[in-house]
Length: 367
Ligand code: NAD
Image (cartoon, rainbow, N blue to C red):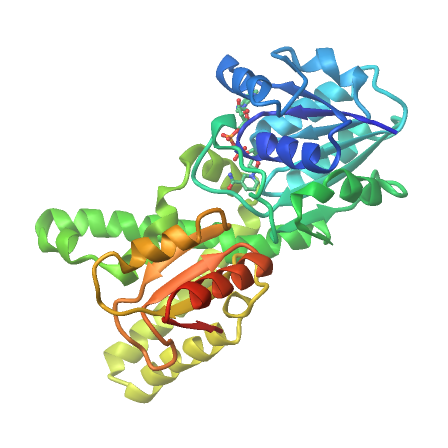
């Protein structure tokens, strides 16, 4: 039976979800709420949604499923508002917030005793872009889409959500909200604090040491990339996961102190072990294996140092889900060739391998 889905917040996440839902359920009606007219207009014009409003309460009673894709504070405010509206019996309410405990706690407080179901969710994909104009039907492909069930989730709710969201091609997984917040504090929230601190430290240092700006290269770029993230979103993430993040900060201070002590003692063995352990731990981590959260499907092309080689390869790969292209600056023995091309899925990786080997005599290696 065709359903009516209401997406509140037609930003990057909400609008990309609308596209993903339409892909597998073209007959579903998607209603959209957005505060600003610009994203409402884009979403309507591009056929992401069927109807739009700037009055959140007006569409809520029409929906079988409501997805709140807004900043955390606003998500909580709308859950509170939903509690006082006359919604369809058994409606599913879900969200997209990057932290879960505060939202799930609010839902349990405001929605208890109502004939609604609630399941917290966090689609673990995104980018620095915002707004419906950046929507991408492939945004969630192979990404983890986390559900955090609670007492309000009810039977079959996650099953229904997975069916609704099948067109996202995400990897659905369930985890407790508090554990979600602990894990993401370590691998996402705290790294953002580190990246921004390192950036600030460098900027201040560069006022006295101007060359710092010029010499900053690959390693520094990798370490600080996420310092360009949207400040509003990250402020609300930190404030909705305070205790856990403060614990990570204290733990890290101790680790830095340890390294500092080893350096001041001149303890070469301890310093070597420190680096070696981190290297081994990183090599063993999911991000190194195909299938990790941010992992992609990579191929390496052994290309000659000639003009237009890269352009020629890109021309061959037109239409594949190419997500990244990297020219390895140094030729390492564990990586053959210098051109590393990443794809979103295994089919495109295979297709690319086929296209390059058929049309060129370059060696292609998949690792
Ligand atoms: P976005 O900036 O692209 O969109 C945010 C949306 O919220 C817009 O529609 C905006 O109009 C609306 N909005 C903001 N403040 C509002 C207010 N006070 N009242 C009403 N509407 C308001 O952001 P996004 O990336 O789509 O993020 C949406 C949610 O998804 C957030 O909770 C974010 O934490 C979460 N999320 C983001 C990412 C990411 O990397 N972008 C990844 C996973 C989850």
